[in-house]
Length: 357
Image: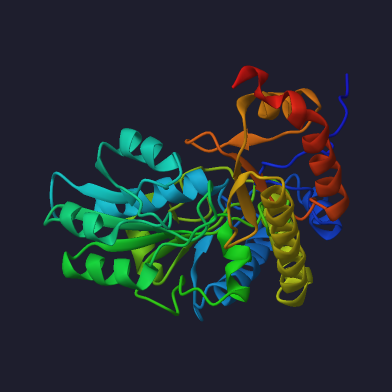
């Protein structure tokens, strides 16, 4: 029995969105292709090259190496795996911010590396002094976040790059969500700003590609040698991806939407999203709530638990940070009309919101 497709008219906390029409059409055309065997599926392999080249334009890299992954989790695991395999120590550690995505916990578990978690400062970016203290001769990788999932903050990537260089570690930037909005800001976050080795950037988030379409990029193709394994029964001799068979639909979708929207379409979307974030932050602040002001198009607000549950009961798909602040992500499907309806429900529920605090 066929179910109904996902409706996004009340989805406010997801970092996924409705695919752009060109992304949807391309995904359907390439459902039966496997970029994991590029010699056999040459057409989709060529589209992957196109997608990686355009992603390089977003992140300040003229000659990028990389591939379209299943998502940010796979890309982050691969970055840790690459650093571990290149490390000269038998006891490698990885230093990440407290704001790092939970995929790094998975990576540490799967790859048996020590994960050292540096706290955040009051501005919700990583404490550089703590990163410096945690780094030693066994540090294989330092991680910075460019668009944190809870607060949309950007770590000081050039400073982290210098710290990584000092201890002979690689630097990985997780820009899974932020990578499609940061090109239109003044932040220093990418390969052109610092000595970044690898980066996660996901077309299926703000990029509006169909799921799954993550991305892993590297400054140098040779870095992928640390991941390569022989593939004797395929037409291609080696493979550096984590999964074998991969989604041709995701690859084609990413290539199509990047060609359609970069750069002007993404710039226009960023401007709409930031305007919505600022409007919503002002609206909630005017109502007396404590608001974490947006840097990127993501807003968190401290609301009573009763109000949060009331909004969930009203059908709004919202979530909280680790500190129980309600977060709203201004994805492409989030309109001003949606936000106005949401704030209207906040007003309706506020008089009774404190009953369960």
